[in-house]
Length: 98
Image (cartoon, rainbow, N blue to C red; front, side, top):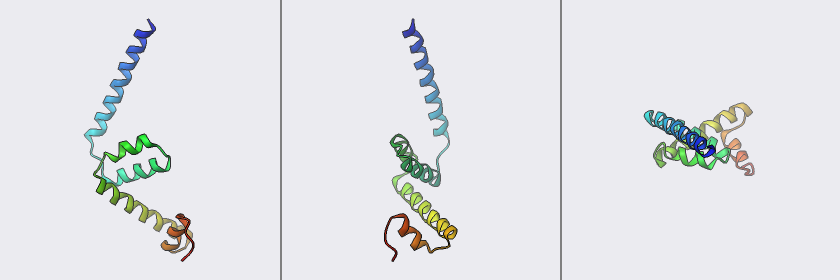
């Protein structure tokens, strides 16, 4: 009996996952959305999410989006810290001040 109940549960869960994938597939992802999701997945060390997000856009578009995100983040931090973007970028990477 429990095997039967488990089988029903598995089918329901598979149906929900399939529906979610179909909903996501209906709406194309833009490169900035992909870059934000990719970087946050990398920061959280979530390999499954990294693999998923990597398929949203081409590798070139993802690279461009990650680069744009990095530039915007460095500029925002530089303004917040009242420092130059170069100083902030070097500090984030653990490099000595130039």
